[in-house]
Length: 161
Length: 287
Image 1 (cartoon, rainbow over the protein chains, first blue to last red):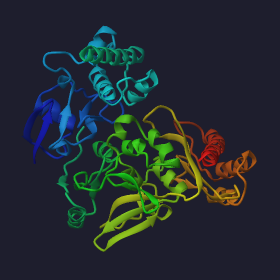
Image 2: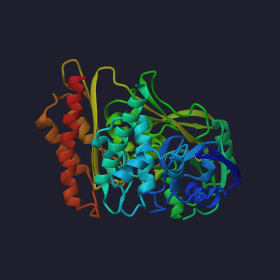
Image 3: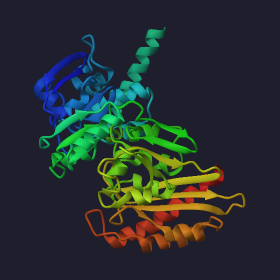
Image 4: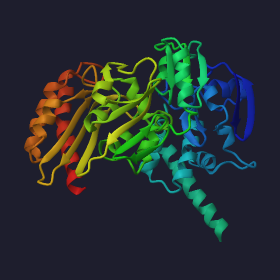
């Protein structure tokens, strides 16, 4: 069936078989490979995308379910040539080791900061609790999301003054 | 992994969804959050011929108080329940412990209830709180007490032409409290053991109504009627709760598995029942 999904601000229309999973659609039809496939069994969260702003496992959503909805992938975090504060923070704070879970962790972090601009470490850990890092680099992931919150707050204060 | 082929219908009204169900064969399934169904389809444990997506039906979401009960619509997500000010007692206590944050953004309470996985959390909560499942079929709407709705492992009492439209949890008029105490190996895993508790107190401070149900320690979510009967009419307190915990431990029928031995799980039921009842009583007294 014909499906139109807005991915990172651009509508993509394609004829999609109902059984096609959103993660496969994003990677093979839309052509964005920043969304990774990890366990493929709804366990690891590596395939996380934002569906209408909320983080979900794209291996456990049908592409047809996303018809008419908006999806943000890691490629959509950057805007106007500027990295998202979460991306900058993961780079500055070494929030990654092998990098495989990083797109998902950054999207969860970005979604958390939209809802809660000043999260505690406990709230950050709770937010990423559906996402596995097989390098076990959680300390720096938490640190990166906290640093991104601080950078956003500083930028907002600068804009106000 | 790909599920096997199926037809897909996005219904825009309950009537449209019911008509599509009536036209389908016995392997036609409704799709709400899909967080249990889609993983099963990918492993080919479920091979539906047709999926009827109910997510585009207006008015099927929502978590709200209405006519003396908490209404949770068929399209309401676990995250909606967790974020709701209307949720109370055991329902509010359990919501943040359903699976993980990503699954909570899509999975639905009603879908989980209909799925009847004995390791699922919600049916214990509904058994403890005395909730009803509301189903709609060609003949109209009917309300099914949760104890009658849950038939067996992965089996509910819906007719083949019915769909769940909402769950109704009665809101107690007096002082009440509820809890959900869950042991899990990691976030996102099924409960090793979990206990749902619900207490209502009369004006004299005695327990006027009690609900107690167990997750993951029997072939179905287990309502411990013996313990509920023991509690009613008595003053809440540690000795009473210890007696109830013994009855819960005796009623549990756990199995040895990767999460632990049956003997140990029975002990967890004993300990967690005491904690669940104490937390429920504490909330009721503060309420």
